[in-house]
Length: 91
Image (tube, rainbow, N blue to C red):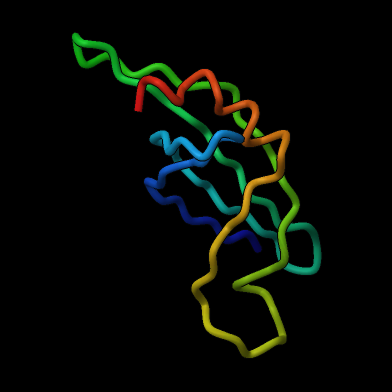
């Protein structure tokens, strides 16, 4: 069984700039769970260009025996933040 969700978020670069991104969360029962942040930019004509996705392992949220709130904040690793840097001035 697999569960997933996505959200429109603002990713933070190393210099604290916020840029538009998609955050996709995927988890498999009794297996791995990961977040996939994907930065994007929109040109003046409205065309959207996506950056390469970054994958980060994360604790299970849906298939978890722990009873905690279902919401959480995701903190991107330094590698993920630096990969978002080219989009900081576009935001």
